[in-house]
Amino acid sequence: KQRSWYVSQLLYLLEELRSRPEGEGSMLDSSIVVVISEVSDGMAHSLDNMPFLLIGGGCQLEGGRLLSYDRLPHGRLWLSLAQAMGAGIESFGDHGNKPLEGLF
Image 1 (tube, rainbow, N blue to C red):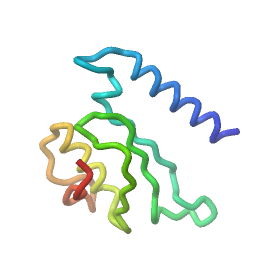
Image 2: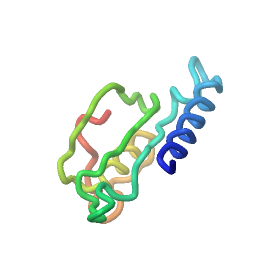
Image 3: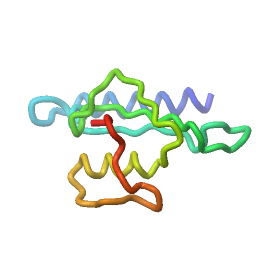
Image 4: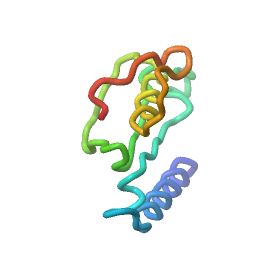
């Protein structure tokens, strides 16, 4: 029930973003929504092999792909997103010292 509720809220957010015009498209076209879980394996409380779902067309994100960054720190994703949005930062957290290759 909890997961169904979260997914329904995600769908609501995406529908609202898509329904709002912005530029030549919608707010969803110029946004990136990041969907994650707090852990990858609830039984082990593991952070390894964490799935991240990126939705939207912001920062010219190319959709329809499954990318695997085996055991790379999450900070590299956050750095990639921040740089793609124009933030002039070179690192994010302790381990986000370079952006992910092939994301954008």
